[in-house]
Length: 344
Image (cartoon, rainbow, N blue to C red; front, side, top):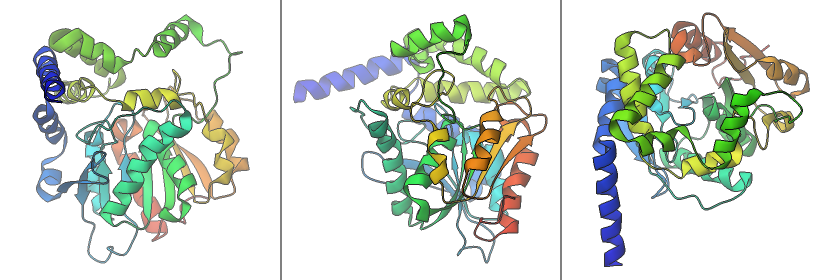
């Protein structure tokens, strides 16, 4: 046992030396993403089952709203709660708002995943969220998710309908199933092969080390967040590098749920007919993820639901046009105190 512990310490030292980062660097980078107002007023904590606790930022809402369901923000795959920096302050003017790092991501614990099925992968993520909810003492909540976070918000609402009053799903992953009869292009084919070989953007960054790894992340942020200032791009690059460079079994679990392009292995289009809470599907006007599958799904949903396009926004609408995105979320809170009167 002693030799095994020494080996683990040695591997961690080697990794931190090669990649130039560690837990403290991750925390510092995440803190720099948040506004000064958030840092001053937020309560920061970890909650959930030991070994899979979720790092959480918690902002109180205005007086008289304590009895209302809080807003819970769920980030996408490989991201972190710092990406919600432009939502936290604004939403807290209307309601208590919380954001957490998903298991295996950000500053949360990094539990092992040994499963081999989509069901086990969903349990990995949804179990940690359920433990977090109970640990925080939250009975009901409004879930706002982006990409993979939207997929988890939807599946959590399916599994625990009494714990969720509404879901707002921004560019949800896993909405549609993969069709081998469609022409997805040579690039998609190559990436699919790499995906099956367990090659992820995160694993590439880790393999390349500090200098080349940062260059790869810088190229990614420059292409994905073209509307950001040079200062913001620098912050995003530093933040993403620290998020990606640390090993995580969440990548294994994610691959059990998603293929390249965000196609679901257990697609939401086959399951959301069982949804029991209102749903708002949000897409950027220039989103690379099509809103057509959501449009086609609406007639089959047994609940109030709608599709909203955010103008002048791409896949990351909450960043590209945060004022419109925040107004949309705030509107769901003011039209119905429990978040149920949002979609028509």
